[in-house]
Length: 126
Image (cartoon, rainbow, N blue to C red; front, side):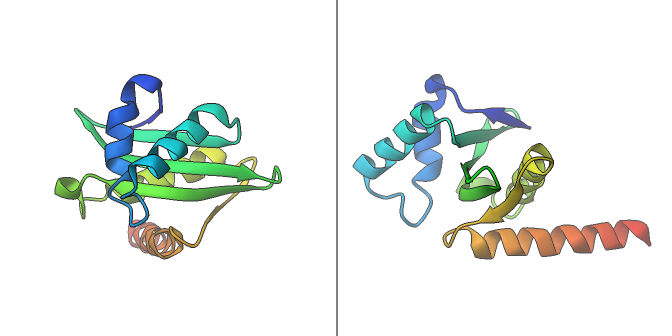
């Protein structure tokens, strides 16, 4: 399930975000986490089962769009649907008030999730 980021999860969140292509620079990661902590339009969520396995970050812009700007899953838990579950929960959480969309870094992943979700819904109806 998605839980809202809290300061006591900082190291875990930084570790997860470091798996993203632009997440290798520690100073940049610290700035990103600081932005999630201080900017009221930035939301960071963690996917927690027994342990925290993933992170997804959303930026609300123009009171119209909820832009998914970070998606990361612990490498040992990838390809098990966690990323899709996070995206689906974000869509549910933000969909009534905002159009959920992706930025350049997350576009291909979100497109894949949406396509797979549509396929799943189609399969469920049959």
